[in-house]
Image (tube, rainbow, N blue to C red; front, side):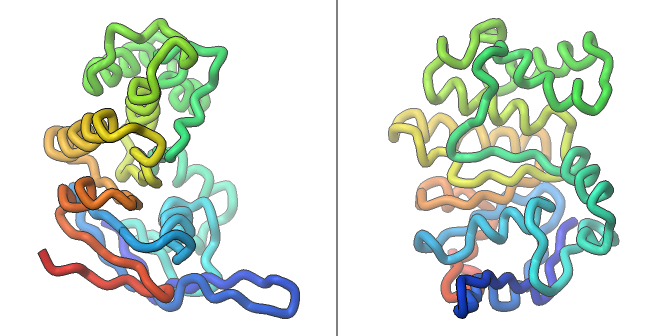
Length: 224
C-alpha cells in the first residue's frame, strides 16, 4: 500500500547540515498497524509528515500504490492528503467553537460533501468511537479522552487509505490512554484501517503488527 525507497531528509542550520533521515526503506501493507518508536528528536515525526504528504523529503521516493507522491504537483499532493490520509496528533486540534459532530463533518464539508451526508457519516463515526451521545457538545465541554476520540473520528471522516497518528495518547493520563489504545486497535481490526503510529508508549506499540525503532536516522524492525 505504501512504500518508501531511500528517503532522506536534511535541514540546514547556518553552516551546519542536520541529517535527520538517512535512507529509509519501508513497506506497509493495507490493513496493518505499524508502530514507530525511538527517542525524542530522532526524526519519527518528520518521517510521518513525509509519509502523509506534509513535508517533502530531501531525496528518495514515497509510493502510495503505484503513485510517486512527490512527483505530483503541490495541488495534487494536497488532494492526496485530503483523500487518502487521516491525521491524529498528540494535541487534538479541534475547532473550539464547533460541536464534536461539526468537527467531524469538517473534512467532508471542505471537500464539498452534502451537509446531510457529512452529518450522517459524522454521527456514525462518533458512535463507532464510543461518544455518539456527545455529538452536540463543544470541545470545552468534553474530557481530554473524549476530545481525542473526536479527533480519531475526524481522521476517519473521508474513509482514508491510512491514518497517521503522532503520539495520539501522549497528552492523556494512563487510564484514558489505554482506552484510546483499545479504540485504535478496534478500528484497525473492525474497519481494516491502516494505522502508522509514532509513540513513546510501549503498551500501544506492542499492539501493532510490527514495531520499528528509529535511531540515527534509520529504521530497524524489532523482534517480537
